[in-house]
Length: 620
Image (cartoon, rainbow, N blue to C red; front, side, top):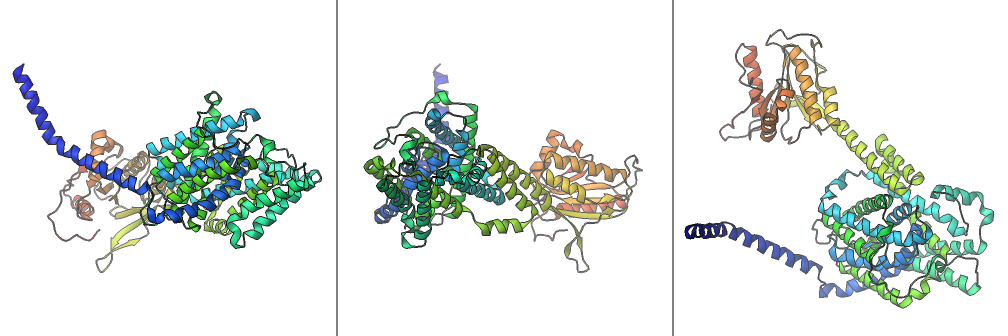
């Protein structure tokens, strides 16, 4: 017993001496990282004044924007106001992109409204709060699962078509409210068509109020008061409606009571949970994350440090979770609010945080007046924002970029107009994947490598066929995954005398193809099937296929899992540190075979040992 205990103590000391320094180094790195992140988040005295001032215009503009987003989602405007003070604070404290403002967005509001369509009017507010929580948790889950890496697969043409569709939906969907018409229809296009065909039902006072708000937005947008244009377009026509006693004009309080002050945090009603609501939350999360990544790209950090898309995912998820607890609707990185933040002179992340604080102060002081706002003014703000979001120059540029980008943009745009937003997001994802696969196929280029009269290696178009006694060295540029592998299959030269039923004669003078694969660390099942079939077609013509420059790890994996049998005897030569060495070795083996010698790569996977260190040889 004693001896055993002594041995255990010695073992523990040995383990402590082995792992102790590593643990201490890891702890020191963790402490330095925590100190750096804490110092980054804490406000700095030299930026305090600039950030406080920069946050005020954002808060003022958030009043009409937040209310308009709630109208877009079909819920009480209080949800947008609450989100406009919680989102900037929660997102500002945690985001990697320091000047990005996380608040209500039109795209998230439309997606949320689409997801809430099945719910009765009495349940929509509670369902909205639950939807916001689900979207936030999905965003945090996406950050933990490192899904941020897949953002790059969303093509610009698809995203532009989607955002343009959202903008047009905003304009079309608010025309009835602008004119005071109770429109019928399931989507914005049908509602707008109903309005156009029933203009006689327009309410004159509402139409005049909405027209006045639109005029103020356009005219003030050309002056130094552009920052206040939304607020003035909301206040002045509303004041006119109240002074004239135009009771026929709908007010915000008609949609539901606006509580005084700030809400207390509370959990949402989980009894409203449904599969459709989870699907809607996933659509909202996807939209918010993609749009947030675009904002981060457009507004890089002032010190030049790169933004972390994963951290921005988590920040937007945290902001949505907090928004839900305080009765808010979905939030995300806002293009307009972030641009206003930068224009107002923001120096750090605290400008956005101060925007949320100012918004809370405004709610405490003026929440009782929110219910008196005329609804046509909110419709005018949304119509103006939607019209400004359409970028004809970018649309024309994508249309001219080629048939495929134009088709992708158009398909996504039409899907947004005629389908619920959640389904339109699915269409956008599918179109993006199809574009990626198509691009992989189109981008693949196969060239022939040969030496010219001066001994230099030059590229030329590959031959359509390879004849007996001929050796062709090929290089493939582009992806060889799936669609790219099928494109490679069409561009490999066909053996001149290979017939499906022909048996090999055993001659060593058949056609030989050498395919260079240097630098490729992943070669999928489709590639292996294509190469296996091609190797068999060469073998039927008494020829051979050599794969050179194969990554050693890939070759080892092929040996372990039996992939070499799929390759039907293709000669595989591993890459070495010297460029072109495995290709030259393959060509030398071909010459020996044709001279009646032995090809030492007949063991299918042949290891070429690195040559002694010397100047890198020219590729062949």
